[in-house]
Length: 301
Image (cartoon, rainbow, N blue to C red; front, side):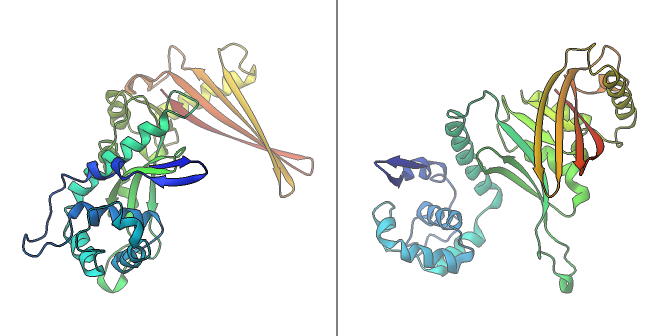
């Protein structure tokens, strides 16, 4: 982890090496010149530094030669690009991901100590990698689902899927990769599933799930209830509010975030584990004196 000391920044590899020290070496025991953990750590550092592929990693390592030789076990000097290629191609992806996730969890714990609130926010998000398709081989674009610690700028886990429609099956798998205890998990409408909510609660976390028409009865009941309370400006319920205003491009947008307890009777609410609150984002846009508005609803634990 980077540490500041008298204006300089130094890297303590003691915080990285232990998480990869027990990783099984996939190489033949014959002619092993470079310790596996040293090759792995160099690769991680190079990729974090913006390098891509074995050639880039090897070039970065050569530029940082004096630095690396003083920190890592490199009895035969800096590895060549072929060493990085062989290691990265032959590593067990699942085993590496387990080690990598443990390291990220340690970074998360350290970063959480300096955050100004008790609960860490983790966002589940699906992305399609641009230009990752191969039409000649009949391969579609690579789609993945990640669990993202937005406040720290860290992806804590990732699961690849064949296509966007498979996000529902990937979300439970990516949730298993991370210690969720005490966190708030946010997911868009595709992940608003009762089984996913139950999994999050079982992991001792809370959820905020987007509610749209794919949850018919609950969506309609929530919409009706919110519209009813808006008629009295939420005067009859214990509502919490937060308002933001942004101005630019010839318009002013005001967003009011409202959170209120779910009513005693709300159709479909009993299917959701530990569901406690209902929220709405009320957006009003002013363009040259002409005002337009739109509402969006969310449900959360």
